[in-house]
Image (cartoon, rainbow, N blue to C red; front, side, top):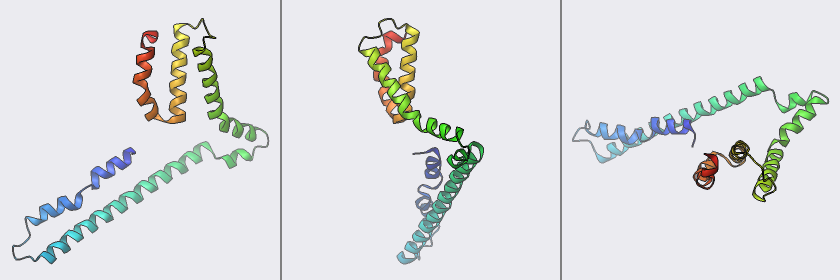
Length: 160
């Protein structure tokens, strides 16, 4: 869940129920159940309209950000207009994940198979940081957060 979704939930979540509970204190005693249900529906409608407006604002803000990034950084079609360099940049940009993933896999194999006998503490620390960055990039922050306690427990004595 994004930060914007959290803010929206805080801003609009339960608005109808809260407003209705306050309004019920001011309902006249002679008010019928049908009128009370109508008031409840009106409050729920108000909450839905507010949620709709908030969702539209979030969507517009996201689109504006995407447009701004494309304006500042350019798009793939901009790169295609450069005859040779553009295609090289597109290839390099698309090759990032597999290159870093396989390079890290190869380094881990070399490390864990014992082929690298003379790694210094700094080199081992750098390898751990590279692994965390690549894993975070490929699998997301949550995967790294979930694995970090295990990594620190296993490699803790080597890092410090």
